[in-house]
Amino acid sequence: MNRFEYVRPNTVVEAVAAALAPGAAFLAGGTNLLDLMKSGVARPARVVDLTRVPDLDRIEQLPDGGMRIGALVRNSDLAYDTSFASNYPAVSEALLSGASAQLRNAATTSGNLLQRTRCPYFYDIASACNKREPGAGCDAIGRETRAHAVLGRSAHCIATHPSDLCVALVALDAVVEVHGRSGRRDVALEALYRQPGDAPERETVLEPGELVVAVRLPSAAAGFAGHSRYLKVRDRTSYAFAVVSAVAGLRIEDNRIVEGRLALGGVASKPWRARAAEELLSGQEPGEDLFQLVADAALAGAKSTGGSVFKIELARRVVRRSLRLATAGTPKLPPALPASVFTMTPGSSFHG
Image 1 (spheres, rainbow, N blue to C red):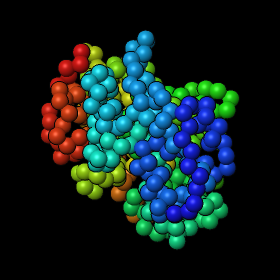
Image 2: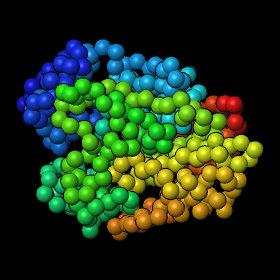
Image 3: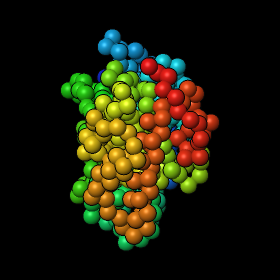
Image 4: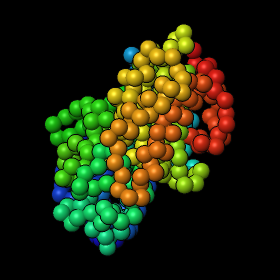
């Protein structure tokens, strides 16, 4: 590990000022950054520890009915918060499907949003990686690509975004509160992430020194609570990143879908909102023919690089099954195996 300066600010303003130094990195739970530092992938000149900054660990009900989640709220605390899980059950299920219980007790909301890809070529410092070293090339292209992107790829990078939480948040129109040298600004979570293009090292629209201080979910997102599910296909049922995942949220009245939300994970460099597919749901009766149509639309334009070709059909099937589960209704209790395809818990619409 390289030598670095360690700073512990006491306010958001101090944290932003400290992070303006070249080579600075924020430290929250440390579950990703410390691994990257130990393996030599990340070499920050300054580490800005946020754990002394007050009021970043709160879960707040907003006057308009939405919820605000502080940047330092632990994943486990958020998943098990009664009010939050009741209003946004798919987000809770996504959280509980990620990592291990020990890591969820340490990992934070902002850290989850800004975690780096788990592409093995990114982690292997002997491999060429444009994301790690701009202009170096991408050793993933033309090699083993089973875990790589089929949507939103570029000739410079085919890595995927690893988060479960972000897939559910993007589907529900989450907004990120950001503080920088010019003050506060709001960014839609979907717009926070950049597609790789010719600059895959720039993963977000954040400017130097900008700090994510909170995530907000609108009150309207709770309208999907009765019919929403997160489904995750992974190589093992626990402590594994998604090969493919999907979140489906439906508002159903008189056996017709009034509005639908759909997002995918494990298939792109960012949480992938399938907006064109969502539009096909409105005003329709839920059923297999509709779900097939929606799945095809969600994967329109998908392309593989060798080993990832199976992901395209797998993603279609995950979309169909997530819509089927959402139609059946959100379970009264979290499944024993959250988001797992092996969970057989029948749904029941109890949120009203």
